[in-house]
Amino acid sequence: MPEVFLKAVSVARNRGQLGDDFLTCNFDMISHYRAMTNVVQRPPKEGKNVIAMHEIVLPLLHQALLCTAAERGCLSDPR
Image (tube, rainbow, N blue to C red):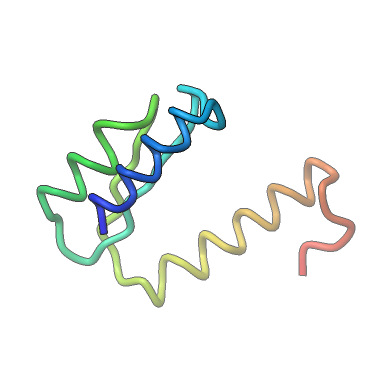
């Protein structure tokens, strides 16, 4: 999958639909070289690597995004 992601970033950049200022994040349960290189280090201005169990970290991320959006006035209710 990291190669598919890298290709999608390349296509979006070539079409002028993606700038250089974006964040990528690799969520995995085991650290892999390809994901670290092709998702976290190469394409973005900033990249994060999160090694954790998906069933714990993804619901927490979802709730954090909802709360942040609500605080900024993007949502009427964070639930």
